[in-house]
Image (cartoon, rainbow, N blue to C red; front, top):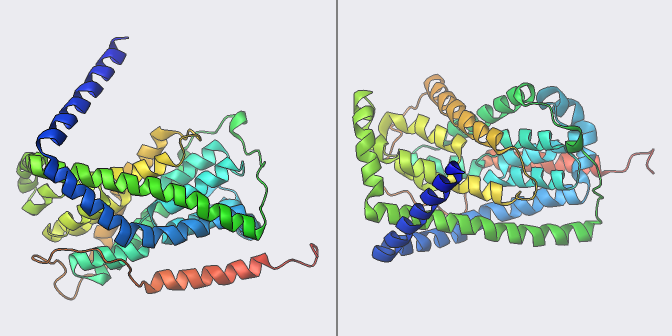
Length: 371
């Protein structure tokens, strides 16, 4: 009873403080909203919407299930997951943050995976796409080579975490087992439903991007960001790290894009910090993911454990990769303001998509037994 009273009291105080800050300093939040809307129009929607439609179509049309018949030995051996998870896992590696998690949620709603499998996928199927890491982050830090290493560091950390979690997660209850009540739709119906469902999800994603941009702008105007930086300056200087690192930690916790932009000026500490930020993915992305699965009730404890573990592994692996393949030129930009472009060409992503399309054509051909 006392704990509930404390909870509601603290929650009320936070809401009251935020309301006062919004009333007294509206300029920061207003500018943040404008920046958030611009980010949605120029980066979020162009990069995520097509991949989200494709991932939904794979599942609704039954293509993911057909792929699973071929790839089940691989997914069982590596992750202990059924073959139908192969397509969502692949899409999570090239599609951007919410794509893999949303595809996993669709599998769970259709009864093709258990609650434990769903929780397992949430631990490692939330990744930044190559277009963001190589194109956007690479331009922020002044080296596309470094952006590529950061991308592979994040992917390596996620896959390693996916392998480890099959042995760590507790076994699910009998009622959480797959029910397989989902039924493949016709091509036209699957496409229509995929676009419609993705449009609703896209609205939710953009809403979180805008609200976190507004909070970031307000915190910067009020001075919360500077206060956190000053608190962290002492420990960071004691460790001999770049002082700019103090001002980048708080943005990295809140939102991945602004966090990477702030971390790009942190000298030699930029690579491990951006690597950790991509593994953490930011509270904004985490809210986007959780908003798409309110009815599925995943084990959130393991979701947060997965995010923290992925952040640590990605930061460490990024540092190791930079030592193995060091830069031949100055990596970090100091004066240029990073600006996210609406579209980035990524050769690895393009090659992966072409290979994926060819594989889909092969597995979608009817076998002699079926015909």
